[in-house]
Amino acid sequence: MPHLLGAHMSIAGGYYKAVDAAAEFEMNVVQLFCKNNNQWRAKAITDKDVKLFQESMAKHKVGAPLCHASYLINIASPKDELWEKSIEALGVEMERCEQLGIPNLVFHPGAFVDSSLEEGIERIIQAIDKLHAQLPDCPVTLLLETTAGQGSCIGHKFEHLQSILQGVKQGERVAVCLDTCHIFAAGYPISDEKDFKATFKEFDKLIGFDKLRGIHLNDSKKELGSRVDRHDHIGEGKIGVEAFRHIMNDKRFKKIPMYLETPKGEEDGVQHDAKNLATLHSLVK
Image 1 (cartoon, rainbow, N blue to C red):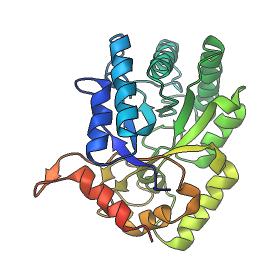
Image 2 (image 1 turned 180 degrees about the horizontal axis):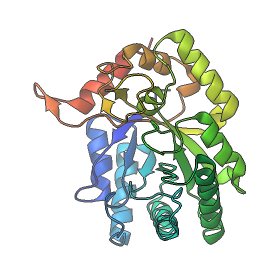
Image 3 (image 1 turned 60 degrees about the horizontal axis):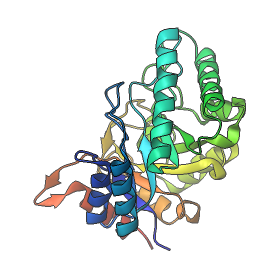
């Protein structure tokens, strides 16, 4: 069975366009936004949108579509107005995913700003519980993303995500998406094989591989423990190619969908996505 490899692709021109673009690069999975990620408002999804998206998925045999939620959402916020607005926005995104037939919605846990880490985690738990109560039959799983830990962002320690997963009433409706750049920037070494094994032993102990539903494959422009989130091309950043060799040859990652979020564009006539995918494929023993 081949690895489940894809990238975040643009929905400009329609949701199906992201799937078509993924297929052009021979990707078998895809990540996309299901609305403009920098706006609160969202245009209604039509039956035609859904039909074209589903048809493109079937035609190209692209699976495991993953939706990335808006960057504006902050369900850890101590400010009631933003907290309520974020819950509503996340709920709308869950419903949009359900409409399109997307099983998982990944989002950043949020920032506690001028409150405390503990209060921020409690706000996240309360928000997710509220969403689950409002949408009891929604089949979409919320994926908490590991973060780099910039400012007061929550999720840069595996313990943060463990606390949320254990605190949510309907824990089976929540899982995790791991970002290689983020965990490295947060201080988890993964380049050396010994470090890689130790980091994922800790991940398995605190969160569990059964809760890992997606991986963002990104190298890092910044150093280990910098707590700065800057993505780089595979093998060209501070993480280096060896960490990705470990991932591509570890059977625990074989069935987990993996999505590039590396910089777009091209160099010498070769698209960066194609180059990054080729690098990953070349690492498989």
